[in-house]
Image (cartoon, rainbow, N blue to C red; front, side):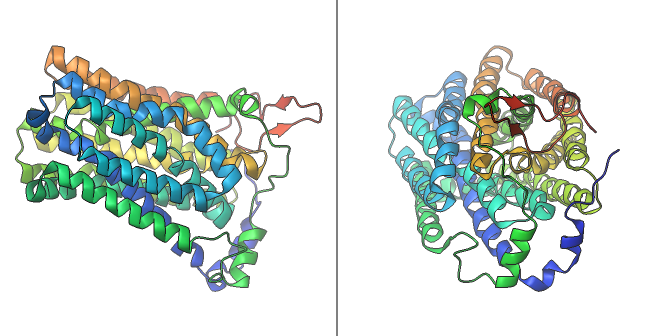
Length: 446
């Protein structure tokens, strides 16, 4: 096990006395991600109650849940590129404004064709959100805190997804599913305005102290290499492993954002009230898992372990734990099923904490951070296209969630192998003067 003391002395000289405004930035950022996921998950919660109005079959429902990801995947690269060119302030504000309008428009739909169109637009305008979040953390947080910061904004998705079940269920019961979509969209529009007016770069924000700014800048990564093109980045083994591993994480995680409410209702015949209460448990477990993974990874960095060790331990361990989702297929009671699903969601988010620190860790230049985030998120969300439709088709023919749950468990194990074996040493990639890429390592380090 290799180690390095890089960054430790600067960190131990008392960042707590330098100011903590960066955590205010992180809080507002995480709220934006939470709103993003409330709007994204509104469809999965609403589908059981929209089916009769719009005469939806299980395959129709799978297509609706998948349509978001068609455009979300297509626009990841343009979204990441825009963030690297325009910065997170403008890009994230425009993204939130767009997804708020698209979500509200879903409440006006009179059939599956219109809903598919609105969901397609929603995916396109949400695409820059995660690359913008990764870029914001890179700008505002030193390397020793970056995994926890990444875990926190990523936990925004878990908080949003967790709140979506009781919140959207309550609103549907109160005002109907159409007005629920409208209200969800308005919240996103309000956040977009707040973000655009308030957010600035660390060097430009009036609220940050000179001491905190100096601390952030002193502990940034040395990303002074030549920027790489998208083609050069994708040709790297490091990026390829990040893409494949994230696909596996999302294959497990997106079950909770798509078919999970229907699984509880169809398998255990839960009422709306029980769905709202019990449906929160895997999300709460995921929130805890994200912070645990982030704290562990950052702790290893501060203790002098290499980035490979600090990132791979939560990645590999988390993916192995996520395979417990398959145990829900054999659970005779809702209690046992939820126990397996809670642990699986905890473990998947435990891994995700390190995953969103990787773009900053391996980028050859700061101008590539959001682009790398977009590349790995593009591949990851192919799972969002494949998984909902695949589950819908299997459900239509088997009337059971057993096969999808077992399949998700197998994919979790595959993810552990990818991060443990395929992902090489974690450090900035380099580009020679002749324009050819150099792999960070020919072997995996853990």
